[in-house]
Image 1 (cartoon, rainbow, N blue to C red):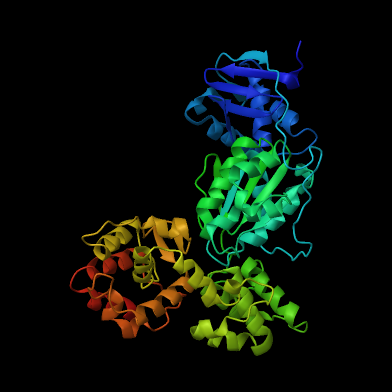
Image 2: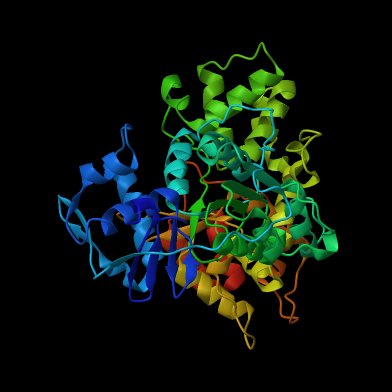
Length: 524
């Protein structure tokens, strides 16, 4: 009689292999996290009977204190893995869960594993950087993502440049490394000049002996085999297709590997969980108490970075108000805040606040050990902007004129106008690709809208001033008001134009009265 760990359970096209810890559909492995598989294993072993929440938590997280929402994250992961058959996993309200279907128990004799290019008993050592810096304002994100990483085998952190994806991914990998036997491979893709180099860079990070010309995603997966590993693919956006192929091959052929990626957009592979990295929190304009201002993570980062460069720096109540204003103007983007803090350490907070209108001259001088595109704010924005197709670059420039926000319908109308007579790409690809537009939750007076983040609005305003015509030769909105567009567009602080009014101006601007409406908006 086979032991429980050797059992298999089959139903229809599904197979649960407890020995290999695999969920298979039509004999193809389906990506599923380790905790999610243990939940599925517990449910299928109960032969359709109810399994209470307490029983599941006790079985999967033995000896640990786990919240109900953590269990729900992993239940969602099981349902996602089941795909169209997600209804097999049924919830009994307030009690627990059952797995429907007539699952047959059996046993499979697995053949010996295929030989790989490294010793069978070798472990992948961690190559995470040894230098650690405090991760300010990301404590909740670390906790949530740790749960997600145990529920999903592919997790991608997305966000605009300078938002802190790499730093968060490294600290996340460090925190979960013990569950992977400290086998963590960090693949740094940022410096690659072409997608063809991604596979060889991954092989080098894994210390695989191979010829660079012969490395493929399949050979990497074969070399990893059944070893337990956390593979971190950092900065995938410019080699997104190659990174997706590597991640997909590893997930399908290596049952004990989890992939953590960072990119401006998701990899779009099977079983992927996309987590947007938010900006740091900034104080509201009507917040004045020092203790409340210091609760905002953007203010905490600014003060910490300034103090690191000038030990005598002390932020009093008046300076905290100015720091809060800087944080709002920079939309809580960590890289921009670090540039501003470095200047504040030398020039003072007052000088930085007064000179923010010359932000590209002011916000530079990044650390020498950073990538060139992280040396200045302008370089970071140029990198993001250049990754967009020309049509989306044009649309972003037009949308940046509206600091109060815009609706998706208004953006679509603007895109149709820019691409008249040609195929129009979807406006939402701007924020799905580079995340430089932020969703504004609906309020009592206005509908849901979007707003381009301040740094990209600044960059786009300069592009508008230097380009007066669209690719098809028609005068652009920026060309008709180039003098005004060249002026800085600061973030409104006290009485912003409402998103609905901004949309009205946008809709009218598509017609002949475009310059008039722009002047009305800017004068408001």
